[in-house]
Length: 374
Image (cartoon, rainbow, N blue to C red; front, side, top):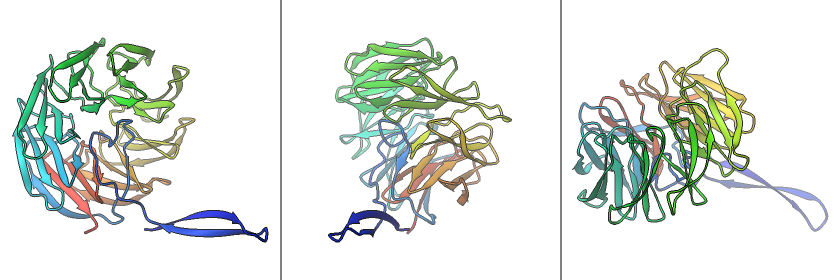
């Protein structure tokens, strides 16, 4: 629906006039990586008001936990069957398949300069031509990869369960640097001002210099963390396995607030979306939580029928998120009221992607769904 923007102007007679400019949300044409952008905020535009199922694709019976990337009218998504799949966004028609060393778990493709990057559960980072699916190079880490790649400054950043964050040359696939932590690197790095931020399984939030791979600073968070940090320029936000959500102030290098649901004590695995002073994320308490970004106080919660590991996407005043109850939900951002749902019949732990007015998400039964207005 169109929305109105009010502009107040003083006329030559000293009388204030109110002008209504009717505008429409612009369509975001691409969703090139996990969470949509390097800050991992999970924000897009052009979501269909009343989504309709346009097509579905059966990628096999193995789960799809990898979240889709959408670039240039093509969809890229990984499957635990060990395939990186590319589909036409318009039709769902298969463009190509690329076989990986082992299954692709939660690692979600990143697309940059005509190349698709993704990690697999054998610990291999793959670079694949976006045009035809031909392999360009591979880089092996020491353990499984569940982190999603981020492409920045000519490097691909990827975490591994061998305890390292790697920077690999995006063209050649050669090691630029690696940084060792005290635990598996599950989270995807958030990028801002030349730093990569990882919320670690070792209980620290770390800021790593992208140019050199050295640590700028660390902040003790005291909790095992699987979620990726969302960055708003001043703070980062993420949930933990200690059943709480943290806001960390980067300038002061301290925890700004901790949120814990007063009755339901469950871990947070979903990565947060950030928009308009709100932090939105799913919990294993079956709830979707919307918190005030400044105070950590609850704005609203929405109850699903199972845990929510899917990371929310926010667009045009609506929240899109999957649940292990098998449903994709669309909620009102202000109130948390349900506007729409789709029952896929299998859990949705992957996170939705949105580009060119179309929503794409995979499910645990190996199906990929696309929704739009037409």
